[in-house]
Image (cartoon, rainbow, N blue to C red; front, side, top):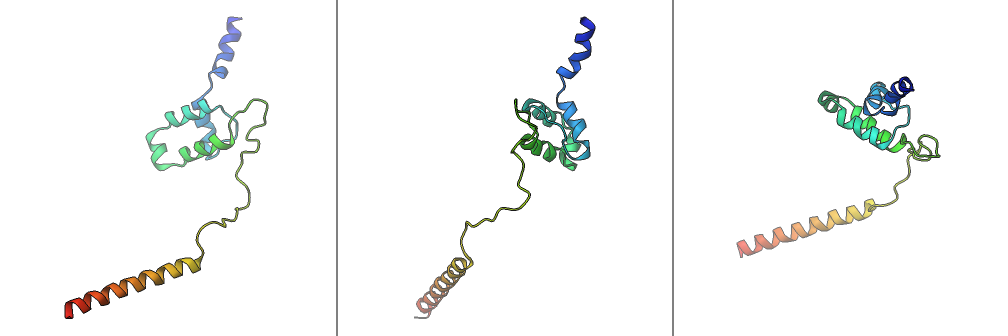
Length: 119
């Protein structure tokens, strides 16, 4: 019985090191708990943080590869394959009008300053 516990203990305590090993090919294939992914971020070496994409890969896995009881890995949490149209924001006509308005105010202020100086 003790031997069985010794054999299964490493699997039960699998954590951040397993995530780091999985992410060596710049992607995380398996599902992990949030605690395991957070531990991997904590264990990442400083050179991996500065010069590699490891941290970004693990942060992406925190969205798509989290173990959720009763659901398959990454179920419904993936980024859509096609870009979503952003219909918000100001139209080019609005920006053009704003630019013209700022130009007119600036020109008027300059002319007024010149008239006061000369007059």
